[in-house]
Amino acid sequence: MAVRVDLNISLDGFATTADQTPENPMGEDWSRLVSAYVATRTFRERVLHDASGEGTTGVDDKYAQAYFAEVGAEIMGAGMFGLHSFPDDPDWRGWWGDEPPFRAPVFVLTHTARPSIEMAGGTTFHFLSATPEEALDRALAAADGKDVRIGGGASVVRDFLKAGLVDQLHVAITPILLGHGIRLWDDLRGLESGYSVTAEAAESGITHVTFRR
Image 1 (cartoon, rainbow, N blue to C red):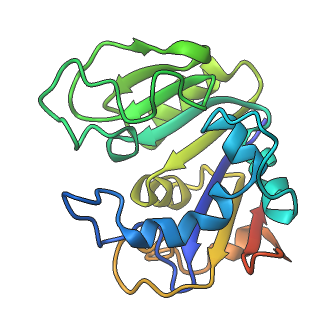
Image 2: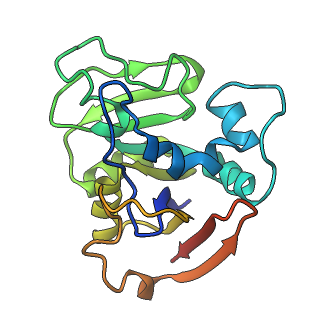
């Protein structure tokens, strides 16, 4: 069992983008940041439910497969669930569709109490106001011996890293400069000293860097 993080970040360390508009709520920069990941066969199968076999199958796909493997529970922030889109709508079920890709209990950190939401495919969203340690205790109990993934966003991941709760951090570094957003590495000076660090280059130009405790 491990507590894991997998994030896409830019060359200057940003894990979020800042060019969203009402017409394009994800922004063009987000597409640039995650383009190699969403091109993989695993992403197309798991997230888009595309059974055509299309998609890349190289190094990026190897990490996409690892992203979903052996995860028994997930922790994410309210933004990753999508609560900021419809904060006052009690019927809002997130932006992950009717069958989210997680297929495990997901604990959403929020100050707004909500009943749990059971989705198709094995995902159930639970909403809690908790410290990183308290949320991790809940997730570990639900994971039944499998890994717990800290899904994001970047601020949530940074909180868990600062608390020393992450066993494995994988970042896929996209060779673009964003200049704005939330930077993963802020206030994490010397993080690497507690981990062994490896790097692997993908055909797409992505550099996969993994920190293992």
